[in-house]
Amino acid sequence: MLLHGLMEYALFLAKVVTGVLAIIAVLLAISGVSRRQRTPEGSLELKHLNGKFRQFRLQLQEQLLSGKALKKLYKDEKKADKAKEAAHTADQAKVFVLRFEGDLRASAVAHLREEITALLQVARPEQDRVVLCLESPGGMVHGYGLAASQLQRLRQARLNLVVCVDKVAASGGYMMAALGDRIVAAPFAIVGSIGVVAQLPNINRLLKRHDIDIELHTAGAYKRTLTLLGENTEAGRRKFQEELEDTHVLFKEFVHEARPQVDVERVATGEHWYGQRALALGLIDEISTSDDYLSRQCEHAEVYELSFNLPQPWLQRLTGSLSAGMQQGLEKLLSIRFIA
Image 1 (cartoon, rainbow, N blue to C red):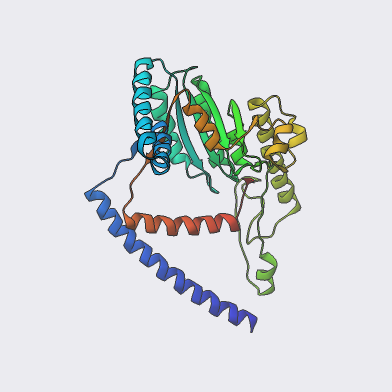
Image 2: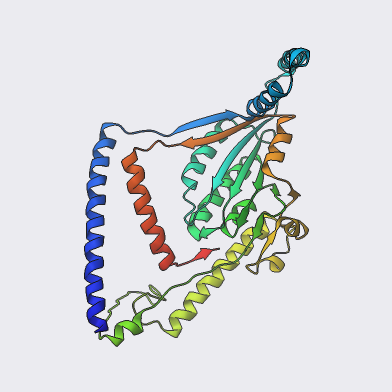
């Protein structure tokens, strides 16, 4: 009875999946025609944050002041503009702000790499500064490894890098943050989680119970260690754990090289800490929000926010969201290795 129910459910599920895939195929075909007609190229956007903060201030003051006080404000602003223009030189320091919102696959690296490539064309070594506003709970090893490698390009170019964390920079997120010359975090930002985790469901016993055989053929002793459907062995488990431990060692070595002042063995337990505790452990260098930090930078430097944007047709956004959701669900089910 149970087997019959499972077979009916499997048949129903197959029909649903087939229908969804058919719809996606049609949408992809239409989207492909659209892309052939017009292929959008990515564009860089540069925002002057000094002007943004000033505009906010003036809007409030215009509402609060009136009469002579408002006239005096306009007069003082004009004087300040003239003085600033007279003092402005080509050598004035600039601060470039980047933002990274991390997900399981560190997919924002696609934008980060373009932003850094553009930035390296204009930023002046040992003079200009880069501020990365980072939010990430971590994710897959290779995705965050690539994201960290992009930040290493800034170090190699001798550009000062400050990482600001308002909410979370854990695991793969902290791997990125560790590359900052200075890490600034909010009082209750989550920091750390220097560890590795993996999980994998196994339904081999359920299949055996219903006389369903699974054949797995490999070439190479450790081409597969643990599997979803096959029968796992102690040797496979030992090898899988060995790979996890090796990944953890690489993670610890990376943090130690980036922040030698940190007692890595003390903090590389997989635990996380809030901002104030992280400061005491040397995981960060300053307690502050990114808003306060950027406001202070605007007092003595020209601050620009740089972002890379790739416009997408609605069909591409829809199919991309569907495929990303399916892929993330599969990754969670078959999670191989996460530094989270």
